[in-house]
Every structure is written in C-alpha cells, then in structure tokens.
Length: 142
Image (cartoon, rainbow, N blue to C red):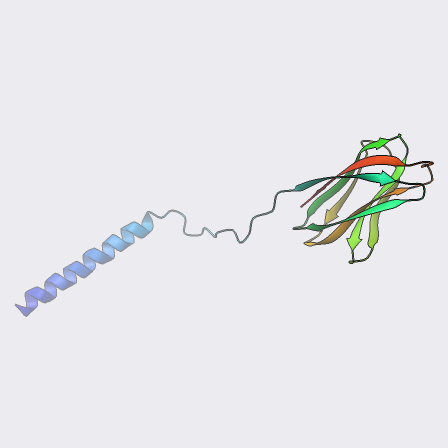
C-alpha cells in the first residue's frame, strides 16, 4: 500500500512538473525587459507679453528629459527684429547658451537639453524697438 501511495505521489509530481514546463513555454520570449520609464511628451507653451525699448523678458522652465528645445517668435506688433535665446536657469538669471540677435516672425532658435534640468528662454530688444511692442513666442521642450 505504501508503494502505491508513493507511486501516485511521484506521478502527480511528474504531471505537475510537466504542466509547469508547458505553461512556461507558452509565455513567449523570456528575454523581454519591461521599460523603466516612458519618455515624456513634448510640452508646448505659448508665452506673450509687452517689450519696451532696451527691454527683455525671461521665461524659466523645466525640461523633464533630454531632447530638442525650440523657441519661435510667433508674432510681434509692430513688426521689429528682436533677439531670442535659450540657456540654463540658475534660479536668478538666464545663462545664455544659444542666441540669435536677428529674429523675425516665424524664425526658430533650436537647442538640445542633455538631461532633466532648469532652462530658460529669453526675448530681448536688439536696438530696433522705439515704443512698446506686443509679442508671442512658442516654446517646445521635453
């Protein structure tokens, strides 16, 4: 009787082992590694204001990942040439990294954020503003 119980237990163990092997084989590619984090979608910000003679406006922002950063002069009234720049934000000022001192409507300044960090966009008079101008810039960043 002990022999029969032992044999039944062994057979049950073999059946369970075979079932486990079959189910594991149905799982597909076992080399799959789930992603650690998703890349954030680009953020688009519409920034507008008024700029005076010899004036400037700085817009700090946070890049949530590395990737392309663009700032575009969307509109300015009356039409004048201004400067646009991208840089790093230290909490008090914008350290300029990329600048274009001759920007007209529709022109873009392009940079690349290497990682997560505090950055800034800046619009400024380059000697063309004689009275107040209204502007809109579009900032796209990770």
